[in-house]
Amino acid sequence: MVVIIQLFNYCFPLESQTLMGTSKNSQRHAELVSASPQIQEIAGHARNDGSVIKGVFRGSLIINNNVKSNIKMKHRDRVIAALNRETTDRVPFQATFTPEFADRLRVHFGLEPCRSEPHHREWYGYDLEILTGQDALQAGVGWFTNYYLDDKPYVDNWGVQWKVDPYNTPFGGGIYTNLKRGPLAGDEPDIDNYHAPEPNVPGLYDHVERLVREYKDEYYIIGRVHCTIFESAWALRGFEDLLMDLYINPDLANRILDMTFRYHLEVSKNMAHKGVDMIWIGDDFGSQKGPLLNPVTWNEFFKPRYAQLCKEIKQINKDIKIAFHSDGCVYDIIPGLIEAGVDVLNPIQTECMDPQILKDKYGDLLSFFGGMAVQTTLPLGSPADIHHEFEWLKSTLGRNNGWLCAPTHHVQQDTPVENFLELIKCIHENEKMDNRCYQPT
Image (spheres, rainbow, N blue to C red):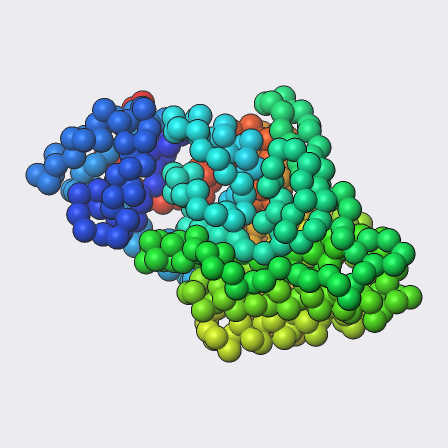
């Protein structure tokens, strides 16, 4: 039986799944169907006799074992092929959301409220990812998962103090959690008596293991370990103090960098052992005008650590992909990232990075992950702008494959839901579906 969901006047298949059958996630997909008030009245009526059932779900849901699509690839196979720069049936897709935007999407889909945050530091389920046709699912472990830990000021398990900054948009308010002060800040940091958390505590990877166990057969699984060295170190020491340490107190800088590196190296290795398909590391080394550090400093302090991390991960699984995230303009460090063993560059902020240049210069050495601008096009553009940007990126980053389409950061509260849905439409519009999928709403 084939399950096809039509959203926003188009449809895509939940490939290789059955609603009434024995596939691994069939029960979960049945739960997704029954979770929506718009279609729950039909959820209990699926039969094995091939009957067609229709219901409104921002479009139509059709269950019909005679309806076939021309889509052959599993979600995971689509991502694997794209990142290997091989032919795919369509561009693969992944996205994350701020908690506030996720809440709006859940209302749009008629789902019950659910606590979430964009890094999946624990198990929230993947309803929105599945309903929005994503090909890759991610879970996070590491210091960076302390973002969005509370809606009031807090101290995390590394001793970092956080503040909560409210904001407003035309679609409602929200909060950002931002660094206030680290435990090693100031003129005399007590580094001898500071100890990072333990990366092997029981239960820390339960959500990762469950994600691999329940979804790897169908979806590409990403282990997210952002703020791997630099950003977690500046959280401990303070941004300005750490930058000065790199030049005037390199011994102290190296001790702090080693703490965050060793912790996240162990996290990355644990995730690789647990079977994720990608380790997604990263630190922000760019502003939108240029790099934060000169290449000499970056090569001295950071490149060797990333190279060791990549080497040890690939000793566990030679086929695992390593993606590197850095916001901003980072042309200067790309050669070093490639030499260190990075396979995929993220997020490709087109406000300051030219996708044509990246593809022409590095397209035989790197694949690309991201590109859809959360700063400009998604919140401020028209549907036509979104379509144009998608086609531009497809013709540059996606030329001869090698592109995993994604927003350049979490989709923000200032984004119209309709604009995000337009992006999904761009992803799926070239799929050749049976005409019976297109039912009036």
